[in-house]
Image (tube, rainbow over all chains, first blue to last red):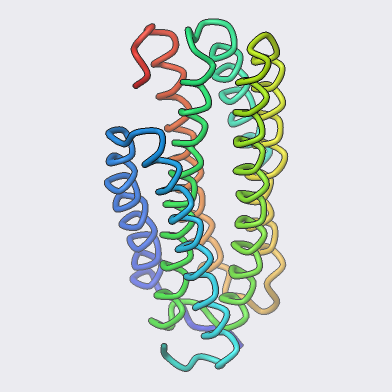
Length: 68
Length: 169
């Protein structure tokens, strides 16, 4: 069992993570200009978003691979 | 993995120690801790979405996807503990400025015990995926390592700011 993974697939995974990190740094840069109150609200919003994305993963997992 | 853990621990200890002694305002330190909390959640969310896209692209199996989801769920709980600790630390420092360094030292230990540990638990789970293609696992580990290094960079930048005596806000 398990997928046959060639070099191109490995590179695809690494590239996906690298892009995610790069996108994360761009998003993180906007934090600097926020007031303390804006930052607190933003942090709370991020928490909700992170949990929402995790919930989507769990739904997909439960659906055994059905696309959302 | 142990080497990375030691490096992260050292950087965090140095950073927070400097924060407690050289930083002119403990409130600004809490600000920085909150910024890092937000950044950890940004990266965490990106990782969660990347895992989903990787599974939908059939780059990882369902079993591997579930294992990664277990890991990120643990990470989310750890971040929640850290966030609550930061808010508590802010209140403590506000009411007792003399206890700032002790509070921040405790915060740094909490971060290492909870959040960093969660990252390494993700790696441990990957090592026990049954029937996993070894190259696939190595690729995912490489991706997570990139994330850990990115956060290490964040703390290194923090240390540089403190050593340079730069303004925080």
